[in-house]
Length: 209
Image (cartoon, rainbow, N blue to C red):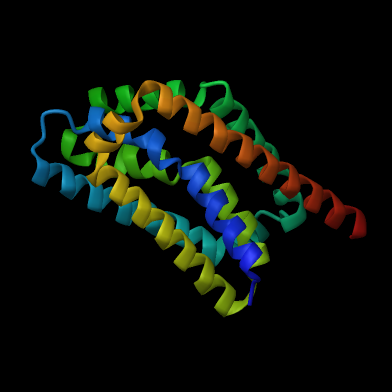
């Protein structure tokens, strides 16, 4: 079984890449004009779809990589670099702008009943960063028990995301523009440190191999 440190690091990594506080204002924008019941339906559906995608990569991530002939250490280096780029965007407020563009494009092209699947579930909840982090962590959480633990961690992160959606109006009003900016930058710094650790571990494994 993974240690408590591994479990905590996995929880922080996945939660930061999903970034529930950053999704709250986008959720409000995408569900504009809906009543509370309709918003709750969108929140539940998007959370379930997002969980399904991440759980799939948690359980079959290594198999998916092997199909393409990619080793886990190589993916760990590539995924770590991607996570570092996402952290860079978070620190310099670029990620939110990109998410808002994705949200705006989806609203104009898709019917409002489909926004739970796109763009909320994919790519805002289960985006490239969260998927990469999940696949990377699946190497640490080996075996059936480890995979189940990772799925449970993902479920906890998705549950917090759903709670953030449900309380989106209050969260956005409480944080405000300044609070949201500070929180995003702080999470970005944490994610950058975790990304560097992923790259370092991957390079060590590649050299050892």
